[in-house]
Image (cartoon, rainbow, N blue to C red; front, side, top):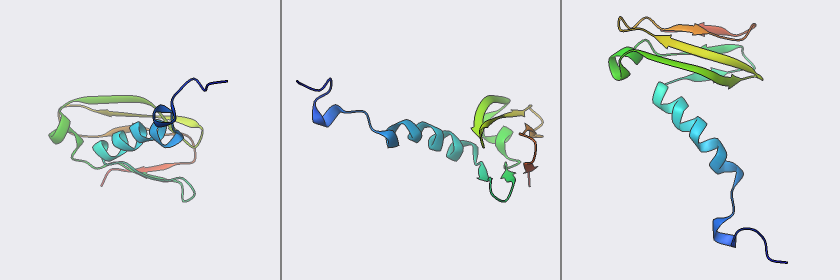
Length: 86
């Protein structure tokens, strides 16, 4: 029986995770779940303008980031995680 994809076109697990890493890098987020911290840079609005990102998975829960035009990052994180914006 022939597999549904030729060998060179098979989906890879690392490819599914790459979009999350690109978003994390673009936003400058640093998460250390075992230590219970998430760092979001205060420069997000200067780079992207007003921005809202909802539904990022962190430790099995969802994270939301809102950055209005004034650049003050507002992060809603799962309970037990501390967010720093400095």
